[in-house]
Every structure is written in structure tokens, then in C-alpha cells.
Image (cartoon, rainbow, N blue to C red; front, side, top):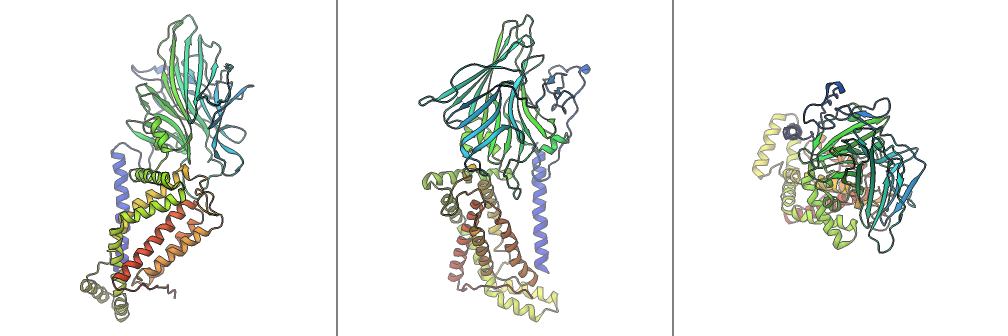
Length: 567
């Protein structure tokens, strides 16, 4: 009974820590980690109300689309419809890493194929990140608002030029020019570089009319709310929009929150980015620091959502021009490349609340891969290093378990003798613990300290695109996919049961049964987990068994297997 009470108290303690952490996140102005609450966004004031002095283009997140498919900003300016439109002409370009397709409607990027990444469902095809087709919508749009100005619906002309990156050539440019609309012309120049997933996008705005204009540039990502094709539903990964600002850091929002008009994000900033995130890959629009921008997320159609930002171009006199540079990223979540592009972009590879532990673990894993050149063996080496780092903690835990195992016959005999006198049994048990100088919780504390580290490593392996399509040995051709022959999950189950058998059997028969049921139930999940995760767990189990065996032998407690007794 005392053991059960202690277990309940630990559960209550753990849950209390979760609640305290959640409140700490709220206190520091961040989105709650475990129990997110969203605040409904204030509705936009009517145009008649006017804009308060100093207010920006969007004082709230843009509202649900109007009947025409657009959305109204707080100042009364209508955003153009975000739903894609197929023009008659498309322009395809190719570099060493990307095949991009642009639509003449707005010079919109409607297809982005990653040539260095295979589609895991169709191995003979490359991975298609951006797409506008019958089954998928995921596009990058830009344009002007503030009048009847060129936007992503305006048919633009592609300037003739090279459409493929030639040998010895490091950059490729694609330029689109709009006709005059509302007295304004817009030209977009995309510059793609060899070896890069980042695309420089120059927007040249020219006032070709006879009166001053005050256009604003918007950059947005539009995609459907479906999970990416082929993604497993067994383990949860985030798909949806995100923003980053220096003030509130990384904020991700579920499509459902946008659907319900319950979005609480930073709306005005002079730094950061907007992004669409999915497992392993991301797209993002980035403006240089110091440029004012209004951030928004909105629903634009049935199962179609947008995230973006709007920045003012200022007042342009007749004949005047303004250039606004932006960077568009479409590629894998490779931390080193994302960090180099802009601060905070690496956070699209989301480790959650264990980021502080996960980032150094990834750094070490990456360094090991630089030496071993195999991600499978790098995982094994990383677990070995972690076991070495935690050797003394584990030694204390296993020493405590060995002592418990040594006195277990005495405990069992006492329980049998006093089975009808529970109060005396508890007193006698505590007396034995004091006499033998054994702490029944001594094996738990060292292991509990390590749990956050191994959870962080779990997220590193689950989130790292480097595991995608990476082979290990023999039949393991992809560490991000489940073992096709279920050999690793079976080995994991066997090592978990062996580890349980080496531990001292709990005095309580119910707890003894649970000690065997839990690893079996836990092992079932691993049949569906990526092979890299299972490999890490097997390695950890084997090393733990070896260390436990050595410590038991040194302490004069011969290793023996405590087999289950289900009666």
C-alpha cells in the first residue's frame, strides 16, 4: 500500500510541475506548452471608423474572406483573393537543388520540387513541396494593396532569359513585369543560387501615373489544411503556419484555431519571418530587420489558409520608384542552413519545450556524422557518449537496485508472514530498509534526471530531415521509416523484457505484474516508429543491461532473471 501511495504522489508531483511550467510560459508572454489557450482576435473596425493615428495596414489578423474571396484589413483596404488562379503561361526553371514553376498570374511560385530529396511513397520521383494541383494547394504569393494595383492575380510577362543553371554558373534570375494598374507597375526578380534553397526576391514598384500613391507590399504563403501526403498519423508532428518576432519568439498556430478565429499572435514587428511548416520541410518569407511589417493569418477559402506580412512602400510621387527586397525559403529543415539565413528560422524544426537540450544533442549528432558518415552509427555513438556521461548516475541507480535485489528474499518472506497484518508489514518493511541501508527510491532519482535528455533525443531523431531516406545497414534503407521486417522492434521488445527481468521484483504482486505489462505495451508502439528511434532505444537498453550486469556482479549479487508470475 505504501508503494502505491508513493507512486500516486509522484504522479501528482509530475503533473504539478507540468502546470507550473505552463503558467511560467504564460507569465513570460509565450504560448502555453501543454494546455494552449487562444484569445479570439478582435474584429476589424469598419472603414467608416477610420484608422487611428499611427495605426498600420493591419491592426488585426485579416478577417474571413469577403464574397469576392479577398479579406478586409483594419484600415478598410481589401486584400486580393488568395485562391490560386491558373494562367495560360507557366515558366519552369531548374538549378542543382530546385525545380521551380512560376505562374504568369502574379509571377506566383506554384510548384517547388526538391531535387535532392525523394518522395518516400514514390522512390522514382523527387519530393514536391510546393504544388497547385487538383489534390493540393501550396503556393507563395506577393503583390500590392492600397489601390487597384498589381497583385498575384495580375497577369505578368516573363522576361526572356536562361531557365536552367548552366555549368560554371552560380546564379539564375527570373523576372516578371506587370502592366500598369492603378497607375503602378510592379516587377519581380527571383534570384536562385547554386547550392541554396533560399531565393532572393526583388520587388520594384514604379509610380507610372500622374498622382502620388501609397502602395503596400504583401507576401503570403497559402496552403490547404491537409496533412502532407504519406505522413504517419501514429506520431504527432505539426503542420501549419508559424511566425517569429524578436518580441514573442516562435509562435505556431493550428489550422483549427484559424478556422475558429482564435489566433493570438504578434501583429506588428520590425523583424522576423512568416512560415508554413510540416514534418522535415518548411517555407518562409523573410524581410530584413528594421522594416516595419504587419503579420496576419487568415482563412481564405474552404480548407485553405494563409500566413503573411504586409509592409508599406511609402508615398511615391509620379515617376518615383521603390525597391523592397525579400528572401523566400523552400526546402528541408537543416538547422545550420536555416540559422545562417535569419535568426530564429531554425525554430521551424520544432523541439518544443526541450529545445535547450535538443539543440546541443543535434549538434553532437551532426559532429559524429561528420566523422562516421552514417547516421545509424552516429545514433549508436551518441547513445554511447550519453551513457558514459551518465555513467555515475546509472551506477548509483543500479547499485540501489542490486541492494534491493539482495534483500528481496527477506522482504518476500516477511510479506508472506505478515500478509494479514498490513500495518505491521509496512513497519517491518521500513525497518528492513533502515537495517540494510537501502533507499527504495534510490534507483528512481538518477533515472528521472536522465529522462528529459532522452526525450529531447527522441525529438531530435524524429525531427531531423537528415534521417529521411538515410540508410544504416543491410535491410534498414531509411532511418525515418519503420523497420520493414520488424526486426528492430522485436529486438527492442526482447531487450526491454530482459532489462525488466534483471530488476528486483517489486514486493507488491500487482506492481510486479505491471512491471512486465508496461514494457510489452510500450514496445507495441515501436513497431510503428521510425527505425532510427528504435535503434537509439535498443542501444540504450543494451548498454543499460551491460552496466547493470557488471555492477550486480561487483556487488556480489549474481545476475538472475525474475520471471513474471501471473496467477
